[in-house]
Length: 295
Image (tube, rainbow, N blue to C red; front, side, top):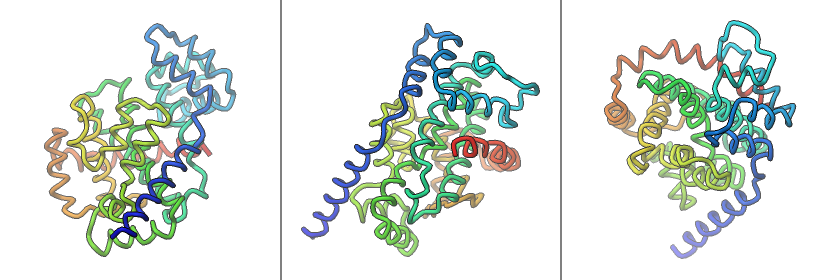
């Protein structure tokens, strides 16, 4: 027992060291987020910051002109893109590009398939955005639901990058024992990917909405009241992605019962959820541009 606890302490120490070594978000991205969070900022202010990084500016313009937004006419001016999408939406675009730039290194994926991981993550983002739309969330806030879903499983990356052999065993343990992956991770490492994701979000000084979406999506009741709709929607999106069998989905024992509880808390029913299926699949195809742009 003492040796087992010693191993868990060692895992936790290595995870913390890995996260400490992770680069900070780029200076331009950090300044752009600060500008967006200032209620006095104008589209021109944000344009001046993003324009300092030609790659980031190009990413924003490319996504603006993609089928993902379907604006119907080309937008060549960054300021015009910011005006059309809104400062809050552009803030979430900048954040997602900055984080994907840090984490899309395929060497980080050993026990997990990078392709399947990001396919699942993208689908959860799309479903979360569709559910937010269904719940009447404002257009300017819907993109935040998408990014919270897109990033919800980031905590898996340090675990499977640092301990690939153990993570293979953890995946197998979850399957054989009919446990959730988070439970198996806690048994092996003394910490699960939600808690690791929360550590990453805090390192990057992300908003409370992101901290709780990463940290509480398997235990949404633990989220703060002001974040609960977002966290419950991300949790439901995760379950629905599993039901659609998109990417590398983890099994959820008693998933139907958990889904029923999430549906009740979010305030939608099964027919509404399944009516979204075709829309979700079509929107996932459009949203793949996110991953293409960040490569």
